[in-house]
Image (tube, rainbow, N blue to C red; front, side):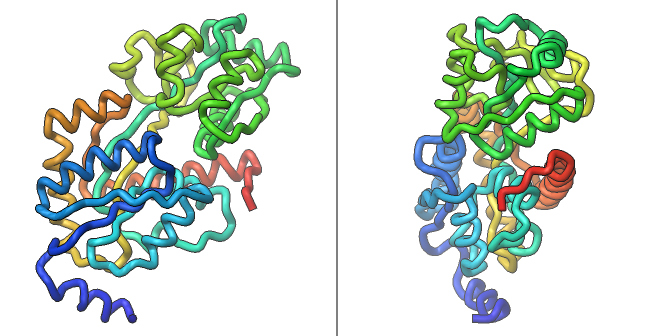
Length: 310
């Protein structure tokens, strides 16, 4: 079916008139999955149709992204799109089965979340300057744990901004990554608050900095990287919703408004903040600009660090 034929089909019936799928490229129970389910419940109330979260994990969300990129542009198959598939994958893969810029129509952001820089509680550093100095004087233990490409790029950006040479130690999952830092097997990690918040609050990890522009409500005593003297290191990962390219403008507008209305509801905000993410809606244009900005940034970091996954 040609794009024009699919668009004509998409506009044949009032929208929405049947269930909507939110496709997510991660397994159930993770942060992005939880965000998707909170928002799906509210969209269902707003739109009057079932909104079903469909998990399609695999290959850094490439499987899910490709599925939605090739779906009919009718507003019934949407992609819960975190930073990774839209801005990180293009930086580290020379070829993808989808084009983040051409194959999707941005609708709205849903939430953003900070990254924490952490060390084990027994490490002899209590601040970022001490960490940098310790890494320089002890190169044999100057390393970082990472369980996702986005965290690897954030850590390499830290290297670039501080002139450090912390070496990458890969882990399969966030739990293993956190445990490696807690036990002292690896010196540090920069990762999202999901796997780190509990150990930090329980004293099993020491948070040295947060990557956002301002301190976060969840960790008010943890300074920003800018406060510690690391410039141009503001990072917030995010999750949003995109549709296949060619989705009618009126459908995009309806969905964007429904998302905006959902994210201001007190119970939705409380549920998102309970998992250490900040609700953040946007216009489609704002979302598009953010994707372009972050894609360029991570491309530059990956090129300088010579990171390629194929």
